Image 1 (spheres, rainbow, N blue to C red):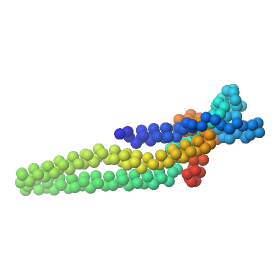
Image 2 (cartoon, rainbow, N blue to C red):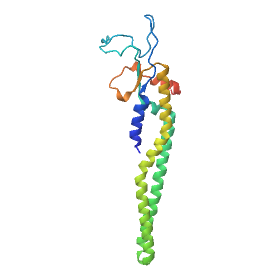
Image 3 (cartoon, helix red, strand yellow):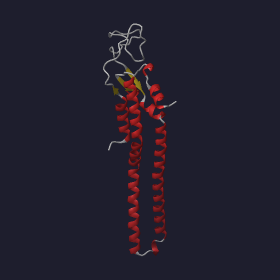
Image 4 (cartoon, rainbow, N blue to C red):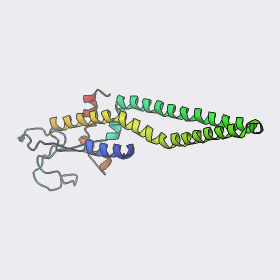
Amino acid sequence: MKSFASRILLLTVVCFTIVSCRTKTPETTATDTPSVGDSIQTDQTPNAGGQVPPPAGIKYGYLNSLQLLALMPETKAADKKIAEYARKKESAYSDLLKKYQTKIQDLQSRANDIPPVEMEKHGKEIAAMEEQLQDMQMRADSDISKEKEKLYEPILAKADSVVKQIGKENGYTFIYDAAALLYADTTLNILPMVKERMGIK
């Protein structure tokens, strides 16, 4: 199974890169005021700022997906649950480790008084505890990652759905993740619209 780190990277890039099915945009007149991201030039000559505008009818937008996730209350609630889950894992490991150490110390202090048959039995118990400790330690990170993936899945799905709705409603052809952009005009940032739709202040 893919780690959460690779999955979140894949989801934030794929989920938030939206190619709208809309292929036509309303025609504008000379008196129309273009909306944010609309192409208002019909050729590919640089504008006053030296930038080449997108082709006519193409509308771009972007947002920082990680910033959006950090702002969502669902993410904060999920992070609390994940932290609590990790604490429980750590507590269970610490409890078993203490029992293991106590048993070792007890056997060392009574080594001369314990019959060989009984000592062999204790030795098997210690070996089993050591194996359990190793297993808990090896599985801890994987278990926490799986729990995080489970809790984040509906959060990512909600964010993806809202971004797609805004993309279709506003006629965007592409919406990019800010992490993939070297430069972008801040007026093309759709994060404020997404936050408003989600009720995030």
